[in-house]
Image (cartoon, rainbow, N blue to C red):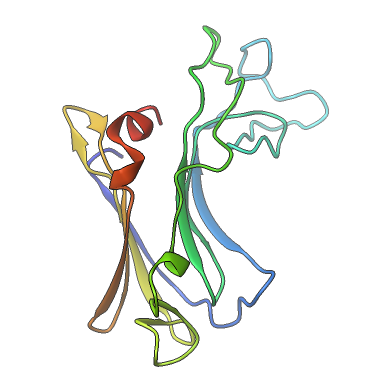
Amino acid sequence: GLGQTFSYTVDLSKVGCACNLAVYLVSAPARNPSGSGHPFAGRGDFYCDANQVGGQWCPEIDLMEANNHAFQATPHRCDNPSAGGVYRNCDRGGCSRNTREIEQSFGMGAQFAIDTRRQFTVTTHFPATNGRLVGMRTSLQQDDKEVILEHGSCGAGYLDSL
């Protein structure tokens, strides 16, 4: 929730290239096109995300999309929903931050701040002011080393729309 922190430990040592281990939050349940909360015809579920994978749009926060070579965290906002709660479009690319933007921060080997041959801790904080999301900060920690993915440049308006 707002002002809270979400933390977990992960081992990516066996998650190589072309693989993506993901942890994400979506604004479920989705609404079908008429705005009702009934399952979608032919699917029987309420799944939605910012890339419309399940056929419906909704805001999404990718806490982690990673393998042992790169880590990315991405909030995705959507346009305002209709009166029935249906989203018509989302920012598919989102406001991502990636360890590839920080030299020697993440990879397989002792030369990296986060050595993905070993487990590490991921902590995402959602700072809020007056009940509104104003930031997103992802910290990767291993031993005494830390890599920060800061989403401050996304802008409070972008994050608040989530």
